[in-house]
Length: 521
Image 1 (cartoon, rainbow, N blue to C red):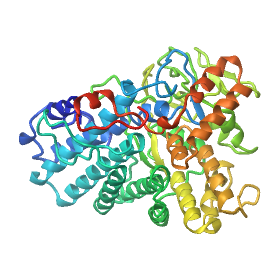
Image 2: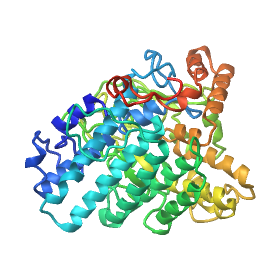
Image 3: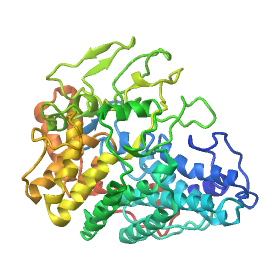
Image 4: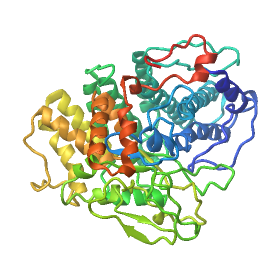
């Protein structure tokens, strides 16, 4: 790990200063670990720091879905005054967005390592201690899973940093990182509680672990490792979530996102969400960027009426036309209006596509006042039940063909059309496809259902079609977009093999003499 991370870990990570809504919101002072982790309250505060990485604007509270995953076949980064970045494919290892992801993920890992190394001395309820250990081990595994997706093999570090001078740590292979993640998640599954006992979207439950394992296994089964035996593991993990009977689809698609804007805890649909909270004016600063950077464009400056939104994420022609007539998701996921400074809606013409923003999280539904120009209390869904159903359908198709997979896909589709979820409906149900055609249908349905939720880029990479999708995206924009949006085609045309993984950050390369750079960088 880089010296910058090690210094941060030693100085600050003995105790984390961030926290989530389910824990104490009071900020904490920096203390030595030798004098900490003595009480349950101190352990809870430390655990909150491990969780808080997820909610940060640099992670799932903003950057991961909004910037790291901005440029795919479903969206583009509609900003013309930020001419260098991962969204333009003209970055390198010194790019701050590439560096901050690495830094904060390892910060979360170090926080987990510190907690796990010290918790045994804590005097607290044995059942609660068991759950804390499970949550910390899962979060550490989740951060490593994110690292291996974006950077490939990375150094596996499972003990707290003891010296800022010990920074030469070699990379582990991607396969060994996946194996570690698998083992940690399996262990966490036995330790954490059931969601029916926890009853919150912001804590790790058995459902969270199982859903995350399904995602991890699908990634492992696809490119670049192609360990196809993991499709069966993905099926088993997702099936556990479904067969638990603890989750169900919210019958109203748009209500999922309204609930997130209004801090409504819908744990049956949203298996795991970020713990964003407040208007970012308090000491904890837990506001995120959802609805602000990736919301419906709005120029309001009235902090009592409607929140400002930049509209950084806009749709593609492909995504817009993936929705068939009657699919209610399209006009919620993709906004058909903008808002002026008075909060008045200006409809977008039927033939105008590229100026339509992500519409899932809309600031007009926020309840907290005053509104902050740049931060919102809106949670982000890291994993939803609809995703689990689609992962189960995909894994079932890869293992045994589509016969047993149609119902999982069709449950999601029926909800999208406003139909009863558990009732077969020939008007919207998909039937009669072979394995290859069903695979394509899953790829399209994941775009329709999960667009703008930060999973599309990794989906395309694991399917082995990211480069092809971006070439098609460039051709589409050149042929269909006005001159205003040709910059998005220029960005898509830059995509090459090396963009399948990020470069190891330059600061890491300069400090860690055992580190090797990724190909092409």
